[in-house]
Image (tube, rainbow, N blue to C red):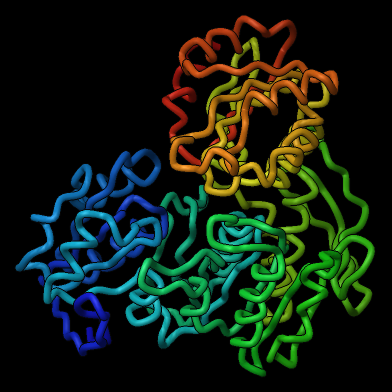
Length: 484
């Protein structure tokens, strides 16, 4: 494998040739995409290893299953021959011990998006699934439909699709499905990650202000997506949520001649006749195609947001001229994504569900879907502000509205809140106070074990408990499943 990589503190580009058996080290290996690429390279015969701090399932389990060594924490002594290449995750700062040793060494290095470009996508037709919300689910749908219709796709997703049980797959097919994130690439490359993915086609689900640690405002976020739209070739496709105002603001920047929209009240593909809570365990709806043809869809994941994810997937697959009957059947067999609305346990007292909910809009969508799916249950939301955005005060008031569908809300302090300047820090205490003023019973706990015990004690009728965090949340998932 031949590629161009950085070397030294100035990041000079150098040509690197790798052969089977060469050793590649990943700094921050337990990120979903990092672990996926590590698995693909191991499958190609490279010796792969990595380091991370606080790795947790499902990626820690996936790495173990692949027999990829995971070293806890970071140490400069690891950055030395016989390592031939280092891949640096975007969560790694320039102050990281291994990063500092790397830029003072002669070992070549790449960001994750760069290795994806050189090693995985360069000769493929790349289908990039992007947007503030719904990327992992829509990417998983797209990969599964591509598989189901017989295209045998490669894919790399920021979650683990239940239809595959791995976050990645590498094949000889010309199709590559990838989740395209607008977060920055690495400490040495501040461009959005998806710029490296040379899309043939894009699904754009939504645009909102997010990643407040790297974007100053919504306009900066929109500018990053404009870069993505300009990178689509003229014969590729842009399939965009036409009901999203921020998408409409930038859609004319697309280089593609094939711009397709979707939505409920507007768009080339439209969502109609949604039945949100079929008693047999799925939602149903119809899709009105541009030709006027109407097709019926059955989906086992719930909520309007997931119906919209399916609509966007259906639209792109149809525009690519894949077998429409197989697309419909494939959507009915889609099983969702781990850590997205994932049922962990059901008992006589209730249900424990895990969800990512990295943003107030995502939290609100999840709770709305729960209300549809379990209309006779109490809904108990358990929230840990953990993402870079949710730990900051910019979304303080938005979270009050996000929890409007919950009957009770249990809140933890922000994860590692000392990392955020005090005047910019999210206040769990204020969230609890504001929710109580609005009539939603809310409680603050800094002890996870006591929180779990009180959650279970608070159950008065059959309840659904949804744990919202993009991390392990102190093991509260297992505490609740053991108690309920």
